Length: 340
Image 1 (cartoon, rainbow, N blue to C red):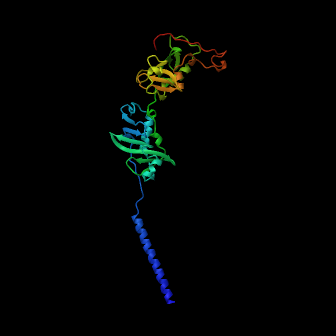
Image 2: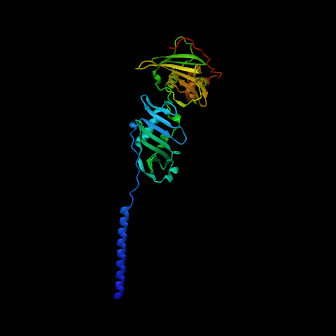
Image 3: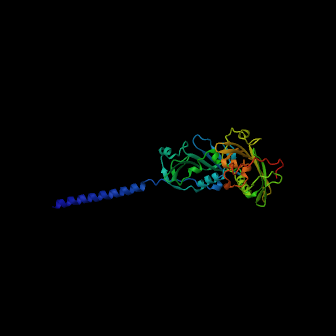
């Protein structure tokens, strides 16, 4: 009996010793465990950035620079930059928030699109020196994968941000043709194949210019609407590089012109538009003093080529223009006197 007790005591003691050794070893292993993996991205303030380089795969590199007049494109062409597009890019850089680590091995770069071939390579600079150098990858589960170009770990960045960097060249260009207030326009002249038509504003009421042939059923409200369009024209695209002004119908002999005089505290200003041929779902257009050949919307371009039927009252009771009860307004060519 006493032998059994000794045996049992020995087994229990051995078990307790083994448990103690296991506990110490486990604690030592925990103490020696590598710390949690973390990733940080450089903090960038939007107001510090004065240059941004963007490249994606085989696409041409895009360079945006801050100038006295605002942001401009310098590569792959020289043009004014779209202010809203640049503001969105800078805001995404400024607000970038890292939520965690998406990957720690290069084997995962391809599927996360944080490679030079698939991601958007973004270098933001100040005075020629990089503030941050990132590759922006795919969007997953409500967040975006981002890697510093010289780092191994991939960060999970909050929200969708790639769209603000991944744009074609023309999407970075300023598409503003005109941007004024319609009620600033004091006089306006439309000239095209339908004739030349001069209008002046008397207080807030539009009238035909003195000396012009009377347009039957002229409607002042039509000019309010047309002046509003002429004052706030935005392009949907640009002519291809090989399209010349003459080929587009906006050269020395344009299809039509619209010229208006703006009033204001800074004094009078004259704006002249050249309207050209129809192209796809729009019209070629140039503004004198600006280089690009724009492609304006079908709506904007067609209104800038308005003739007599665009200046008269609508009268639904008579039926469509050209019907028996509402014959088409005859073509009217205004007298060839100077602009007002």
